[in-house]
Length: 410
Image (cartoon, rainbow, N blue to C red; front, side, top):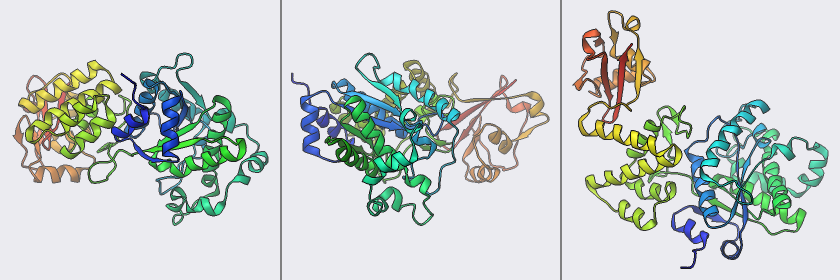
């Protein structure tokens, strides 16, 4: 059977949003092994779920014989991408950026084969940090029209708050990356999230003007729900890929609890399940759709963490959803007998366990009958937990319908 063109695979799964030259890109991907790149600015110490879409694209491209370059933005991170933000990023030191980049590498290595000729990891600090400002402006700045740059969405969104010249240079640097990678590795394509469209076009045009080379750009859908809102936000903030920032159990639970209308899209974008299976699962209705959510949560947790983590999280979730009984994998907070003392209020205990951000949130939940302790609804906002509430030195607090937390006395 003839191997499918990866362009069609990406399109069928719902990744592709915009292309600079759709027909030419499809033709090129069908006739040769293409080197392409995606840039990742290490602005935090972990990748989050938004980056995962790009990692999936790199993996699918590699499976179809193309060569990914995972470009770490050690240089660009020193300025920060102005797209999709309302304020300027805090300026980071080279040491923090390098440490963050190392964490990113570990994730890439799970999904990509970096053996000889298969994939490349590079860092734009190598060519951006030594740049001479005057040379750069003469060689690169001369090719950019300020009028056109100001019309780009990534800058337009910032005009009211004020856009610094410091950030204005970001597009030039990302464009220069594409030119350098084209010269260094014969890189012909740049991919990115839909918010990178203006920067990608800048790189395509710069490479054409400076090197006389035709290169291409493609952007992918940002991960949004059926209402168009960005997915991957939790009560604690972003949904991180690092287990120390978002535990495998919390990660699993996020996907287990998504809206029914988002199941098919997430299965297509976040797993490698065949599309026939994705469509079958996405078409399930009523309580049956929960089976599809379980499969989604299991598959994504397995890919990001491990099969063992996925099994543990699934068993914990099933135990809780099934009977409200406890499981070894349930999130747990230890409290000393000294901390408990004569008693601790339910609201203080929930704060200690990071179940609520503020005491007013705790009061509101209790007033709405949204908190139970050992399967008993808490009705008094001043309720106090004492030693008598602990069975075998444990108790279980349930917040809302789906969040369970064990408190262990030590």
